[in-house]
Image 1 (cartoon, rainbow, N blue to C red):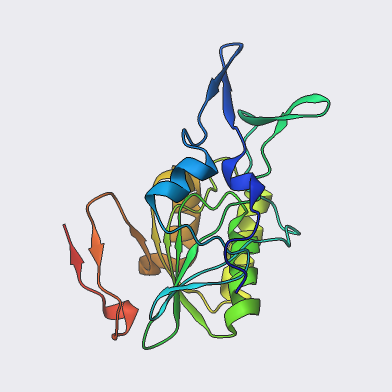
Image 2 (cartoon, one colour):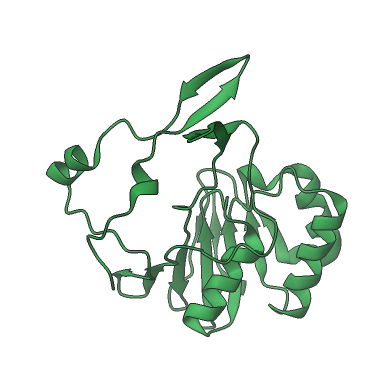
Length: 203
């Protein structure tokens, strides 16, 4: 593990472009400020946080579409440019039957994230939880996602929320039926030590 390494994208100033103005949406603390408050351990490779719970590490292979937004920008040498979200990562939880991937917003792209997990952990992915950032995905992209989920990952269970987008949820539900479940704020999904297909949902 490469802890404490330089990880500049995490602290890069970020902005949202709206109504011809740029509003800061990045971290409000510097690296030094944050390091004074917490034991800061940065790693671009998968790191185990607690037993059975890992980070994906940096997702460098972006061969599949990403969850970018033209509204999210950073300052570059030639002016404003789209944020590439190089610091985007997800969590990986080990369960009795395989891996559960817990996504935040998945700006790196759902298929890119899953490919990273598959390469790094070499275990079946049985569940995807959180936002898949397919809100702006067109029909071609959604068909590709469905095909890869089915043929490469064996149709994992999908517990989806926020930036997945309604159109994507409908398309995924049409493809995978009751393997797709909403996952709104406040939902508890018990995975540890059991088959996640039998997880108890509490509201």
